[in-house]
Image (cartoon, rainbow, N blue to C red; front, top):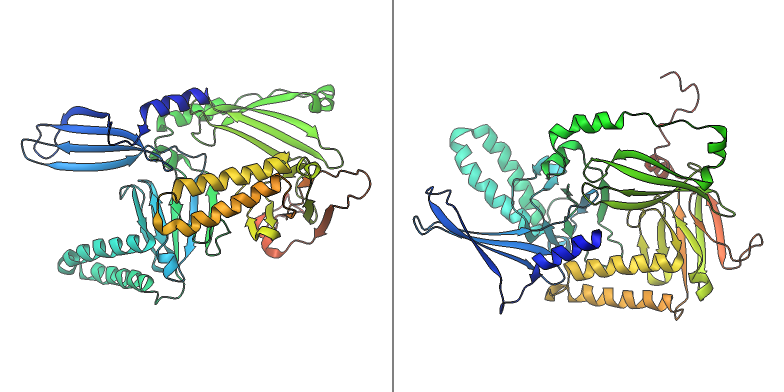
Length: 450
């Protein structure tokens, strides 16, 4: 079903070609004079970027003209929040791609550009600051005459933004948040981890879903009622046979909040523990996801697993990477956080393939065709070549998994004896790691009393 949808999209959005432009001409209302004008629509695809809707309106009666570019964006399963520390000119030169639903915050100045207040744009961090200063300065001229106190507060914000632009403020933070998950801020050291950028995913609330057109307010009560239904009963035999059965239950879709079905199966990983495999398919929006979650909760200690990869047998090892596990390859000076690759049960080769595809898609989508990003493209291509060398066993590396929750696993090739290529170390979590796992505020004694 997903493939059919993709084929339909490809038919509607053709590659950009100046020799054969399929322009749709539509008669439409002019909002300036109230008479009819002409809108020209071009649905096209920019190579290595995304689908776009280019529109041009012309009114022959009042000569009003308007040109507009709208991305035909795919709404991601989760929103994204990117926090950038601005330390030098390189940070000001970062490319930024925003949508209509992007909000931009400067916490130090208590300033925010809310979503739906500006159009989609491709710009830089410095460009955003300059445009904001220009707009605020124009508004301040009016407020100087009508509301002097408000104008004085606005001047503080303007001077603060100018200070960020001139790098005279001490390491300010700029936060980009997008409910559709389509915000992008370039990484000048890609494919290495960005030292000054923190990215986190978040689940949209009902207001954000309504804003981006995923859920209607009148469906909220119906969805809530449909969730309140009997879940069935378990007897002793069904509990004992959980490993042999697939359990199905209903719940809200993470993408559109409509009620969808999730299939769940409990399975045993030899010499490890039980894990829960879940697959969700939403008939309303087409959202699909597969997740693997450990069945035993958070371990008493964190876990670090180091596996030496140098042969096809190593590539075929089963690996369970939990959603709290980060990955590092010292030989490539490469590290990805826990959120970059969600929880998955695969092989080492499958994990490398996922890294390869994710980096390749990012590079082609946001850097191709830009002469200023040539060094990033070159670095990424060299890195991808090294990943290919790992898959073909031309390069030996150590893959280090660090999981504060202790729920990750790499298959041993010599069970139950020690595997010479596999090192497992347990460690006590730091206070910060316990905070991230939500353990610091848990009440474990007399919890019936608040």
